[in-house]
Length: 316
Image 1 (cartoon, one colour):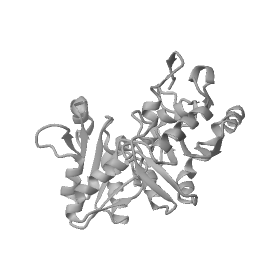
Image 2 (cartoon, rainbow, N blue to C red):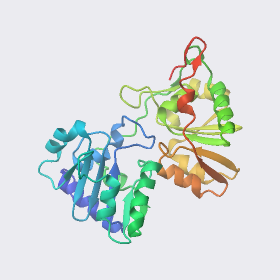
Image 3 (cartoon, one colour):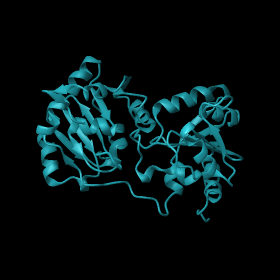
Image 4 (tube, rainbow, N blue to C red):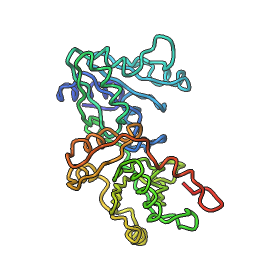
């Protein structure tokens, strides 16, 4: 099937929904790291709807579809979806349902809603499920974006990764890991999967240029009392950076192996997870592992980044 226009892409999406037994499919604006600015690889909402705005969601049923836009994008959204079936939901306007309310309305009794767990936050999935409960609806994790958007899709970013010297960062990665472990202990936790890219950049002094105008690397880091594992495309890490990370107690693993790694953990840990920023695929994997106890807490790295180092603020 041709996939050159929005109607053709919606038709293909509906065929995939039918094949996977879901009645509604949700595509949020997001990547696995709750980033404010997205790598082009994760602009699936734009690919399927034609809308380029931020802070949005796109919902497709077998008979209708709708995109949510905030006040910054009302005019732009009208122009970009003109000529398609897509209905514009003007967020915050009287009578306009939230995406959760809309999904509950259009879902059949006992129906299934599909979404990609990597690009949806745990908080979004929870609020959706709360609305769907009235109809005994369930959520099925799929990744129809990856299945359908193959031709011409930008690759995952993999710019060279390097470490900011301690003289500029204030502390070494080993010292910052020690600070994080102490904070986790105060919160009654022993582990955390760090997924927010700005927090990870601070924690390991890690830098790259994966996202326009931000010096971040697409990666995760799993921190326990005695170990830190950085999940990154290892081919982009120079031998010098890899040696420095190892010297600071950080092991390297491949970016795509993070869920498999978490599912295979056998050492008992109490893992801190912030529902606001942790993607649902990660949260569900942590929760499904009997060796891991998940504790919902605000990410401690956010306030830690604001603490001054010497006579200046520590560099993000």
